[in-house]
Image 1 (tube, rainbow, N blue to C red):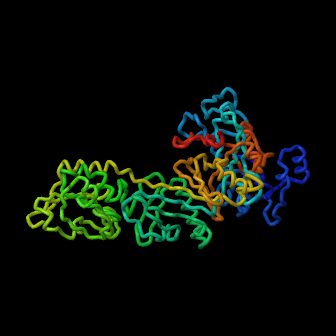
Image 2: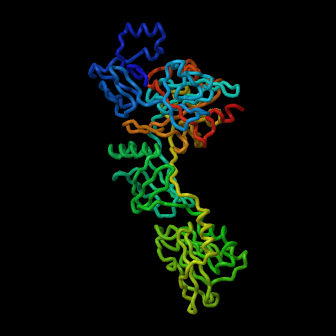
Image 3: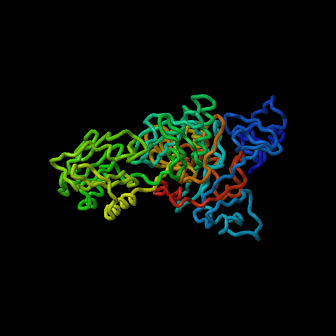
Length: 546
């Protein structure tokens, strides 16, 4: 944590003589010295924090509403550590290391971060993330960290900050065949609407959670609960939701979803038609007819093109539903939690009958769900009535193959946010140049060091997988809004050309010694985390070095 008595001057308690002395000695940047006067209504032992628009007046020993800043005997402290990523960190665990100078030499060990002595030989293997770095919102001040470094002989700069996002949401992908609820249905948390169901995408149901209208457009309670939920979801915590006209859910990034109390195991290998096509050759010679039951496209093998290619004998089976193309049926049942995401629990209920001119006694029928989790074997008697029999071993091998090809069911959470407001003023005096440079691939955007996808079109709209970000990357402020890290990396000369705050650029070596340049909330302690194995080094974006 770093000691100071204001964020950028709003809680200033220095005398004018002290300020003048600071100006002359360059102990404070000039704009910090131009402090606004103290709020005269505020008690003398309180500090006003302007890290967000709430402007908390913090009493000694207390923290602000966001729990990110605290008053320690008249000095404002940033409670959270800055997160640094290190390429070659031996330990899998996070290690606390102080800013502000080396440790005693007798404890020095540059290869062991827990005993790091400030050796900067590994500086170019260290990346400063926005997590815990402090924010510029809603003020005009440059970003907390503007870091120069060198990679493969190229001079680079990374602008590091926390963004306060009111315009943000999560896009959640839930791998399940179970029916979650109708499209456009409201999603509720603790009785408040926090999102809605969107489309189904080939074995996965998509949800949209959060967004500015839920954060700021409804009641205070709706905004507060939405904000709390979004923080938990982004930080990989389990959250409980319900869907109007649908299921109750417990979801957690990187974990299997729990739907109506049942933990999902697998997502489908494909729709019913796809499963027929994939496994037709294996079914051939073992079963006379195969039906793969699916909420969307139910497949019938002997009618399907795959069956035609194998010259299979037509079975005469008649399926309830709307025929699409040969062997492919829509709307065989309503959505639900039964076979193949339908509401049926007896697969024979979708069979309308048999054509006596084509069917024959002894015909062997396999009915299975898209995941292979449900399967039944039947043989027709003399009256062409299917009689359930034990599944033969050769058929079970194929069912097991279907299960083997179904990937584990997971919940994927992607943060989607619009980077606007004064966040851009922390990077450059002319924000449109930053936007244009990003679209021209001159600037690499990361969130907590994780690669971010920048949406096409206007603005800076980023999307990132929370599982690729460091743990606890997200915070909140009570406006309400989400606090998320964001970093912009580019060539040093490009930063100059887009109107960057060149006078505030510091070398990474200097920052590792002293912390952020304006000392207004960045902690004096930091945590080094190992770079996620799925992420490339943030400064290796080819356009930056090519």
